Length: 407
Ligand code: PLP
Image 1: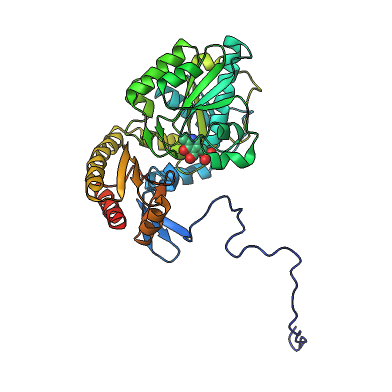
Image 2: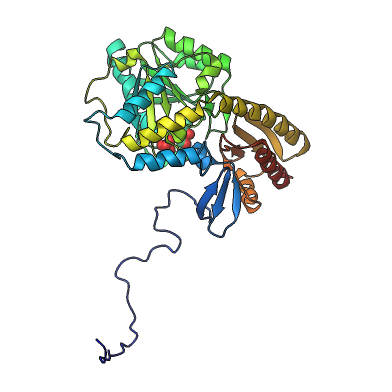
C-alpha cells in the first residue's frame, strides 16, 4: 500500500436512518435510575466509576446478603463456571438435587421447584396451590387472597396479588381470582372460605409495603384459620427470608409452618434464582407438565446457591443479625425521639423502615450525596437492607449519616 495516496474525503453529514437513542441509556425505562454507575465493591461498600465509595444499605434490594467480593462466593462461582452451566430440566443434575435436599433438610418442605426470580416463584406457588385445592374442593376452590400492603411481583398473577394501585392500573385486566384484603383477622375470617379459597399469601415481613413485621400471634392465627378451612398458606420470604430477620426462615420466629414458601433474592448470591418449597401434600397434587421452566435450577446457579445457603444458615451469622437488630432498634428509638422529621420505625434483624415527614426519595438522594445508599418503601418510608455481613461500625456510620440527613 505504500506510495498510494488515498483521496481525502470531504466531510459529509450523516443523516441517522434509525431513531436516535436517548442520550442516557438504551435500556427500557422501567426504573428511574439514579445517575450513578457502579463498577466494583468490597464488603459493605460499592465503588462508582469516579472512584467514590458508598456504604451500601440496599444490598441490591436484599440480594447481596454476603456483601461484595466475598472470597468464598467468588471461588465457588469460578469453580462452577468451569463446569456445566445448563442442562435443561429434562435431565437430573447433581447441584440442583443437592440444593433441593439441603432446603428440604432445613425447612418444613419435602419438595422444591426451582425458577429464576421472585415473581416467578410466586406465580408457581399460585399454580401449585390451585392444583392442590382443585383436588381438595373442586373448581370453585380457586381464590387466592393477599394482604393490604403486599408486594409479590409484577407478572400478571403476582401483580394481581400486589397492593400497588400505580403498578396495577395501567395493566388491567389482571389475572382473575385474586383478592387483596385488609390485614385484619376478623376480615380475613369472613373472606376466606373452605369452599372458595385455594390459598392465602403473606410476607411475614412486608418489605416494599413499608417494612411491616407481622406479629407472631397474627401469623399463628392465620395458620390456624387456613388449616381449619383447608386453605394453603403461602409465605413469601423472597425479601425477608434466608437470614434477614435473624432466622434462616422468617416463619421460624412464629413457630408455624406454611404449606408453600417462596424464595429468591439472596438465594444464589446475585445470580437469578427463585424457589418454591412445598409440603408433601401439595407436591403430591403436581404432575409432569403442570408447570415448567427452561433455566430453573441449572447447575451453575444451583452450585452457587448451595454455597450461599450454607453461609446464610450459619448460626453465628444469624446470631449477629439478631444482635444488630436489637442494637438498630435502640438507635432508631433515639433517632425518633430526637429528630422531629422521624415519625416512627419498624423492623427486625437487618430489615428496617423509618417513617419520615419529607418524601423518602429526598432522604435517599441526600444520603447518597453523603456516601450512603438506602432505599424507599413507599412515599414516606426509608428502607435499610444492609448486607448480612455488615459490621457494627458500618451500621453506626450509616446511621450517623442518616441522622445528619434527617436533621
Ligand atoms: N416478593 C417480594 C416480597 C419481593 O420483595 C419481591 C421483589 O422485590 C418479589 C416478590 C418479586 O421478586 P422479583 O423482582 O425477583 O420478581
